[in-house]
Length: 299
Image 1 (cartoon, one colour):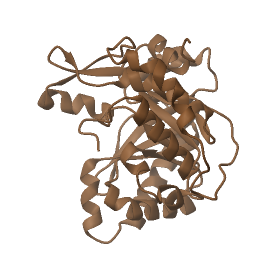
Image 2 (tube, helix red, strand yellow):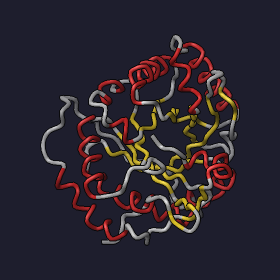
Image 3 (cartoon, one colour):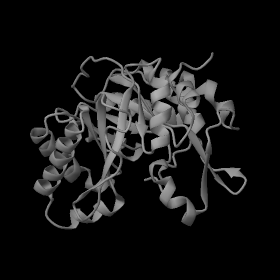
Image 4 (cartoon, one colour):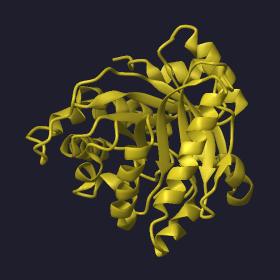
């Protein structure tokens, strides 16, 4: 489980001593990057699941956590009109209230994916009966209020670093949400989730797909780890996008993350069945930096 997420950088940097810095694709780990492209050779064999991933279009996107992110999106979208705008509109905490964040219309009246972040305090709700109805009521309110701003809601992203031992309860909640909310549901996954052998089964039929996050997870970037993730993505047979970060973190003078490495490694996943695109978390990075992460790497 990630100790510090990019999506919570503003509230954690002061206390943790972690500072975000611009993504650098020339990190020392860059020596590994070209080798990672060969990781697809490890992905032979059949999926453990009998399910087949349905075909679908690729749509890249950008998460919007600040107004600065929104401005960079508007610049980037001039040349990429199909880019998914995924706006953090609310955070769900253990009080079971969807606390408002950005307006879904922060970049104007257009198609929007709504992102509801489930705070780590939400872990505590599993200690009692699942709060299904209250969560559904809040999500329905979020969608209704978003539509009232004039945007067209295309999907709802549920962003939760669910504890692995709570994946059955979380998947059951997601299934109930999917029957009541009239938009496509996507969920965020982290590498630890993919190690659950039943992860795909738990979510199949309820979600349009999942976004596998490859930043702020603590997972070392290597050819072996990339191959392992690729095999897991194939095995679970769910449509997926890849989430990458356009920034690095520092502890003092040392870069403490490998986000650039994973951003390059993720291009190897393009050959997998179910690949639906990538999502970039900019952390105030420029449109040029985000665009670079959406391009194919130079050979």
